[in-house]
Amino acid sequence: IGVTGVQTCALPISYQLAVVNQFGCADTDDVFIYVWPLVSVTAGPDSSVCYGQPITLIANSIGPIIGPFQWHSSRYDVVANTQTLTVSPLHSDLYTVVVNGPCNSDSAFAQVNVYMPPPVTLEPSATIVAGQPYSILSVGNGSANWYPNYMITCTDCVNPTVSPEVNTTYHVILTDIHGCIDSAKITVTVLCDRTNAVYVPNAFTPSKPGLNDHFYIQGTGVKEVNFLRIYNRWGNLVFNAEHFQI
Image (cartoon, rainbow, N blue to C red; front, top):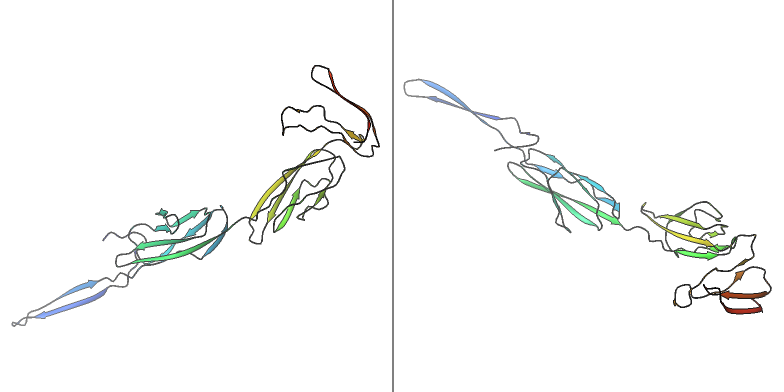
């Protein structure tokens, strides 16, 4: 029998036969019997891993084995002929390793539980006047880490308030109790700086519904607009209004 791996066997047992014939002649012979131990295998302890993260399972055996280790997955029916198996599971799964010995086969199991990342959601964008506070409403369970640390009330809370004076993209990383993480970001667009109390868009497209089709003046501390004139691309006056509130 071709045996691979560690060839461990018990000490040989010796049997001796002595024979005497009718003439008093004697002779002896010996026979040695080697006993192969039964093979056994372990698949390692049950484990937990975050969604999509790699984990390595290591099989160990006692006794001589014939052929390689054979890994199977109950969900995907994956087969790997290696002692170590590295997987990046997307679902909890039961992995089985099988070994063959000269006298028997043995199998072992390892359960891998997959934790989903903590979902974090927030609005992808917001528009404010420079310095105006904006409360970021995010949804998620876990410890938060916001960056950059610019005009933000806290970097370790779930719902901070920001008041940037320039366009800023805020990122958040959320970590749950299992160490799994998820991330999201929000871009805060600033319409004007503190030195300018009024913001007026320089173009709009009323002929394309849903695409920049609303035109209005924004500002702080403005009592009245003296006049507003809108010209088309050819320089023709198409709208005129005087003495109105924004």
